[in-house]
Figure 1 (cartoon, rainbow, N blue to C red):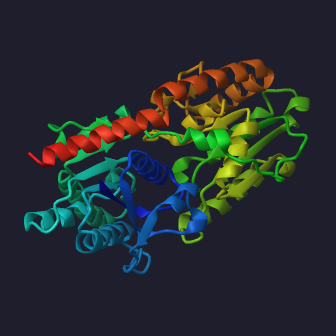
Figure 2: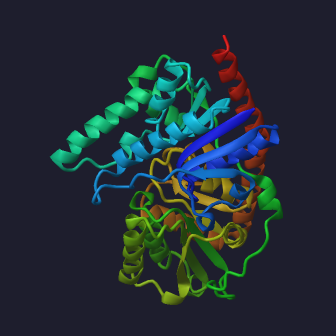
Figure 3: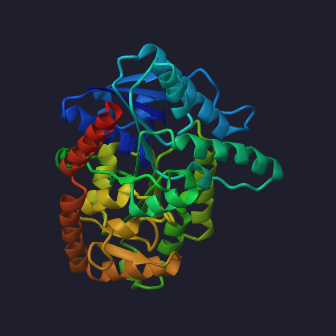
Length: 406
């Protein structure tokens, strides 16, 4: 089967990890996969993207004089859909995610019998819930954009989400699809890479560091990375000074030089670390670490500090658990489905003190940290393994094709 995956920006975020894993799963089942995207930088992408044909359709700006990012993203995806309908007519199945606006183009072409591939839409989270509507102008602007998202998501032949939490939110946000079955397809882990991945030097981490805490997120304000800095600062009050001096914090995140928020927030976090008085020799900020560097961080960390609130799913905790690394996360959203509290990690209140208390607990009892790491590995192997993802995705593809041919 010829499958076209259409995605807005093929970078290194969680959504991109999902579509790349979906492509790998499809390829494993013998399907031919083509990516169509609005932006792709080989130096800022996952290693597996080299296995696929990637067509970049970038003929419309990201914004208009710094405004209208969402509307421009919708238009860019619609142009990508036009490209698929005109130049990739042999497509037998569309796998689309993140932005549903382009589904309208596929539906129009289907109406006239010009393009008949069924559509699977993967909703990571409703776009309209990811924006802040402060000004009156933006409220009017978002009213149209949000209505368009609500209207077009119903045009998918099959809708998937990443967790029970997201399914509940989707049903609340889009009344028009409440009567339809929303399928849960948990993101997976390419365990072969984690098993066979190479090593990295990580010279930024001093050799004497014994207790390494890691935060892995894009440099975006909604990821609440400052919580990790504040917790690391409070940790000093909860353990002996001789233990704290061997603690080290790594803030690693996706960093795009074209993304204004990435640039601004990176500076904000550096200023925050200075204001908190963190010892300069006990923390480091890493921009867009390679897969090998991220793997090495998880190997060496005593815990991952996962800071986003109400995260839709969050693949980082799953990656950490597979690498036998304990996870400390807020007791909300996706982590409540991935982490077993007090067994594979800690689900805590979203404040620095709660994080710091569990960090101190791990520093004082490394055997407990190791036991939780072992339990995390077993959980990932049983629930989030690639083999299970491959089977579930293939079943969904067969289902949507079967319904289309009725």
